[in-house]
Structure formats: structure tokens, C-alpha cells
Image 1 (cartoon, rainbow, N blue to C red):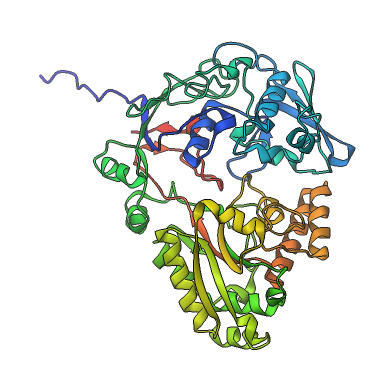
Image 2: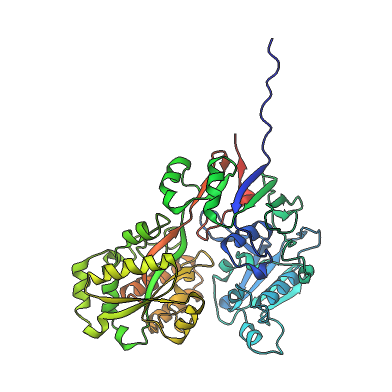
Length: 499
């Protein structure tokens, strides 16, 4: 008689690929992988619904909107703790935000707080030591006052850099082994050559993760993880872009989505040569976006038919109409409307092998429309200075949204006075729409206002959308519940290990 069968020992850990972060302190986050890891260790005031991407309660169980969207009062959950057992208080959010905004820290994501009252004074005046607009009324009540109304301000607050930190965050070991309040805790300090082990935090206020352990194996080069994935040594890993179609066929599209990340081109509109929208329309019509997506980015991008990508609420499939489709005859007709001197210009870009290839592709495409474009590679370290000094003709940049809203892709790029408005757009009609969008209380109306703003941007071609980027992760069979959001992040706490 045969004895009882013995099944395989159920797995209790997920093996995932990542780059080695320099720090997981919310103040020092500086990479996509760092944000992904920090999102498992920390919870901000809100999270995002996995289907609609609307802001939902996280550390804050509810909030009140006052003064027409200029003041927000957040009510924190009772009994919430950090991984060391200390309570999470409103004061910890105030402390964290003041740390982030500290001008001496030069934090990469300090700009997220620029809408909070007192941010500019804190940045500019040495005697100011805090944000006047972030106040703890008591342990569980956080009051935030903004410089101007912004009804959808809460949508920003799921960003990992805005997470609370305990008073001990001032210590030297916090960067390598931070104490958070999220569903997982870091078992040991960050160390080169050693996987990052994240353990389920049993004191978590929300639903406990189904997978007790996350083992993040670190790679200096993302593509180095692929052989280990194929050997079944990893459950989740980035796919080399050239292999994305093959990987999608073999492993499905669970780790693939359009990101809120846009490659766009623009012109310095303060230069009289580039003020006529006919030139910008000619450039857009001359672009072969499908060629750029396939030949330059190898499947990690798709042609952009607007500014707002399909994964972000408010996306419209017909946003650009025919203006983002290649039509050489129409491009030549538009180019003929502008003076000959305006048809010759430089394409400025930060030098890299990939950017060189993009420049060559665009120069050739625009040349077919009668536009004489000279590629001008710039020092990547100093390219920001070029943009700030107004030394650019045509330029191409990648913009990544910090929260899943149309506003996050529109306002920075085209609002008058925005630090990221490198096209120097100054359009009163557009500014009025963007201000209406910020102040509008009704979400449906707000979506329509931003749709009209996008339509106007594309009609006047203030920025020229080229491609949207895609996440390119492969997920092994048996890993269930894997969803990538528009920001490129996934919630490991919701994952399940199937058979």
C-alpha cells in the first residue's frame, strides 16, 4: 500500500528584482525603485483605489475640505503605530514635511510641498524653520493650509515622500533602515550585495499582507535580473525592452501598463521664431511616433495621442485628433506658413546613447517635411541650466507625473510661471482653465475642465506629445493580484501566492 503523499512546502515569500537604493528615508528618495520600496514600508495620509485611482483613506481615516479647498483637516486613525510600536501622530506628519521642505536638505521631492503655505518663505528666509501651513491641532488632527485653493490636493498625498516619520528619523541609521508605518518592515539595514528582506508588520492598521516576506534581490543593471527570472529564481523582474512582446506572450500583461510618463517636445515660445503655432503643428505632423516607439524605445513606449495617457482618469482617446498622426503633406503645408528662418533650428537634448538615437530619428523625420534641424547634444549635468537660461530652440524631455491626475501632466508643463514650463508658454486662456480646475469642487466637472485644457494645449501645440512609456515587468504564474498603477508602482501587500 502506498504511503500518504507529501506535498511541496507552501512558499511564504516573494522574490522580486530591484536596484539598490541609496536610502529609503522618505526625504532622500530619488529613484523609481526607491519609491516602490518605500511604498511598502510607509503609508501616507491617503492611498489610491486600484481601479479608479481616486484618493482613499490610509493613515487618515477621513478629511474635511474648508475655505473652498484652501484648507484641509485630516483625522488620523486611532491606534496606528510605527514599526517600533510608537504611535503615529499628526506631529509626525508635520515633522516629516518640515524635514522634506528644509532647504538645507535639498530633498529631491521637496517641491511636492510648494503649494503648502509658508513653503516659499521656508526656502528663502534663513530665520524661517518650518512650514506655517502644516499644523498639528492634536495627536490625531492635522491641518494643512495651501497658498491657493486646490480641491484635489489629497490626490498628491499618496506619494511616499510625504509619509510620516518618527522623531528618531534624525538618527544616522534611519536612511538605511527606516522605521515606517506601512504593511512591511525592513528586517536589516541596506547593504550592497545583500537582498533587502521586508517582513510583514503584524501591527499594521490595515489588512495584513497575505505574503509574509518580500525578498528584493538587487541588480546594478536591470536587464541582469532577466536570466534569473527565466531560471525561476525571481517572481517579478523587469523585462529588457527588446524582449517585451515575447515576455508578454509568455507571461501575460500583469506587469505592463501605460505610465503617466510622457516624452514631449517643445520650443522656447519667448523666441519670436517659434511663436507661431503653425511651426509646432508642422513638427507634430512630421513625427512618426510609431517609429520612435519601436525603433528608439523597443516596445517600452507607445505613440502618444495626447498628453493624458490611457491609465490616468480623464484620458480621452481622441484628444489630439489628427494632429498627432504623421501626415507629411499637411506638415509641409503648415511649415510653409512660417518664415524660412523659423524652419531652421537646433534640437537641444541631454546627451546619451538613447537620446542621440532619438535625435537622429526626429531630425530625419522633420527633414522630410522641409524643416532643417541641427541636433545639438548638451552636457546632461548642465542641461537644466540651459533650459532655465533660455538657451534652447526645440527640446525634448520626459515628464513623469507625481500623482495620477491630468493636472499632474498639464499644470507643470504649460501653466504660466511654472518652474517646469520650459516652453515658456504664456496663455491666458489656458491659465484660466487650469485655475478653474484647481478650484472646482465637482469631480466630473473638474475632469471636463482639464479635458478642455488638454484640448487647448494640443490645438495650439504648446507641447508636442511623442510617446507614452510603459512599465515592463514580468510576473511568474502563481503570483496573483499583481497590478501596476500609472505611477509604475504595485502594492505588494495585496499579492497572493497561488498554486
